[in-house]
Amino acid sequence: MDDLNRMLAESMHDAAGHAPSDAGLLGSVHARSRRYHRRRVVIVTALAAAVVVAVAGIPIVTVLTGRPEPALPPAASASPSAPRVTSGTGAVRLSAGWKAPAFPYTLPATDGMSAPAASMRNGNLIAFFEATELQHHADVTITVSAREPEFTSQADQTPISVRGHAATLRTVNVSPAKQLTLYWKESSTRWIQLATDDTYTPDQVAGLADSMTSASIAVRPPFDLDLSPQGLIADTVSDSRMTFRRAGGDAGFRTVLRKRQQLTGINHKVGGHDAALTHSDGRVVLSVDVTDWDATLEITVDGGLTISDADLLRYAAGVHILNRSNPE
Image (cartoon, rainbow, N blue to C red; front, side, top):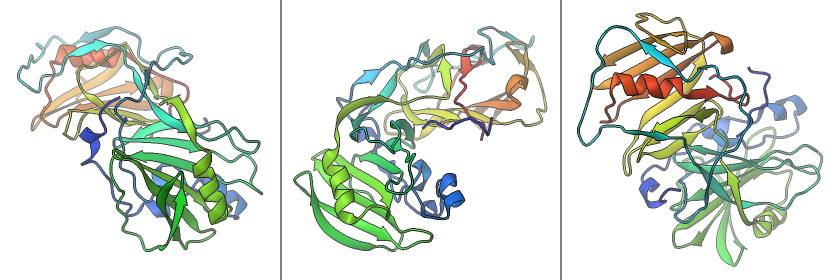
């Protein structure tokens, strides 16, 4: 599935402590840029820093996508062993379906730029605008923050004004092109970052920021879920994973599509697929051999959360892999 195109509310305050550093991130670049040897562009994982989750009051929309033949049909059969039933404050309950958060801004439609793709990473809502014409345009990534971002990389900093606010433009001198990150405090509860490269001048970067308008761009998941963990907050939604966490906690319910791995200790079936369910040190892992995709679906529940084996198998049976997914 490597040839497929990769397509990239809850309270902001719950995510204020989830700000990742920019260490190591500036080394990642969009693969397309290397083919042109023209410039280094910014992708979702190349943000200098990102500190955002779904903003309070951001509209919630249901993701409507075409659903291919599911890799995991909605039926599960377990081995004869009795399911482990758990209870307590960390017990996970399942509810029907899943609703996606929405990214709250967009840029004006422009020839040479694709429509935005929204994703969520480590509590961060992100919109990626890919450049389709490389002479006058560059990829743009916009991130909404709950607090001022923190940076560890060395950069030149220039104060400018955008959208009626004081802003800072960071310039990181890397090859083949400099990376530019403009960030500012949009409101008392919201910071915004706009990242691109030096295909744009500083004035043009400020112009992009000024041109942002309100929108509701649904985050696009890699899976269609028949069931989801009730009361948990979406933390990461990318082309290979969906993770959830408790308010104020770390992600403890993770569903990841990985490149196919050899399963050991097979003891269950999920929709006709071999599966291995293991318990260790308060963590439960269910790995499903999804032969249709030459992939392994891995579901992990930890972080103080608990779930019965029967419910975990039921959840796995309702995970439908979408065509835009890409095993990691």
